[in-house]
Image (cartoon, rainbow, N blue to C red; front, side):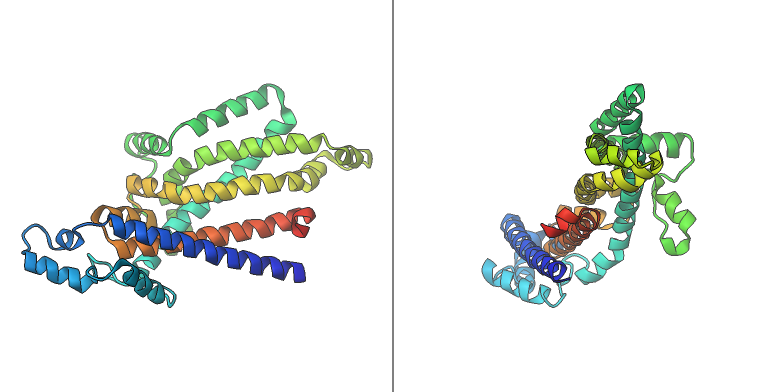
Length: 316
């Protein structure tokens, strides 16, 4: 219990440090690169006097360091300000969109984990032609960009066949069926490349574990093949798969920007893209902080799972 508590404290401190560094660098990079924000908000017809008044209203006439500490002190209380363009509180905008992105990414992660385990274990156990075929399919899936896959899926399954909606999102509150139906194509588009590399990692780890002496010992004790594979070997090989799956989770958060744009999903990625186009700095900073928080939490959960699966990792 003491080791676990120390581990959690250490990871919490490192997570806070990462969040501070990333948000600080992002703040200065965004505000250094921002120009004519007041003019963008008011439009070309605004007079110079109106632009100057808007600049003072937004606090852009203040030194950058002073603006940073004002933002940081407010952010520590959960206040990320209001959007420069819609005047809506940033936190409200994020919380309204976050469930859509998390639904997409979490569902994709679950699908990736299930399919990758089945493919990886099958390839490791069967070997031969099946192994080579699965590896070929996995490499091909990993080579196709997500946006290309998304456009192809929309063209074939939404426009030509009409099996799934091309755009839109149904919240889970309206029913699990409509929710899954609206996310099927986006999930497939995000999952293809993730399944490919995760399955490859699980396959390699499984092959390595199957050659260990302790596996032969289990066989000599008369344990069934399925019990050895799924209770012992897969558990020993799982940490490698979990690690790469966590990396894909982070990549999915960035990939969601493109996928949400193609499928018109009202998620955080779509929100961040629109904010970056119009230069809505408070909204961009709020999205950034929440995405980094999600990444930190996911990495912590993965470390806990790896520790549960591998006692050596717990001690480390």
